[in-house]
Length: 77
Image (tube, rainbow, N blue to C red; front, side, top):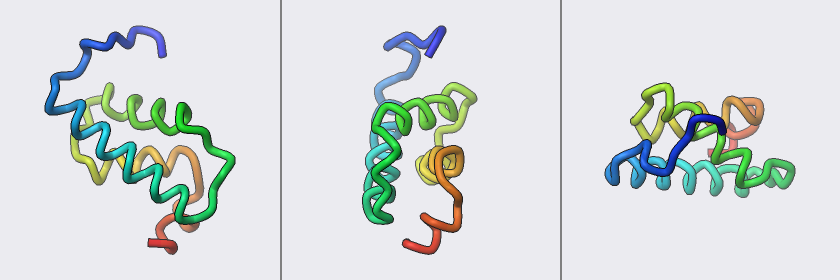
C-alpha cells in the first residue's frame, strides 16, 4: 500500500487493528471461505484505518464487506 509506513498508527490503534483482523479472519474461516488470503484482508482493514476508522466492529464489518457479500458472513454469525 503506497504511503503506508509502519509508524503510521499508535500502539493502541495497532491493537484495535490486530483484533479487527483476527475477528474478521475467524469469520472468514467460519463461513468456509478459502479464497481470500490474509494479505487481502489486512489491506482491507488498513484501508479503513487509514481513512480514520478506529471502531473494531466497523473495521471488521467494513473489511469483510469489501471482500465478500454481507449475506454470507452475517448469516453465519
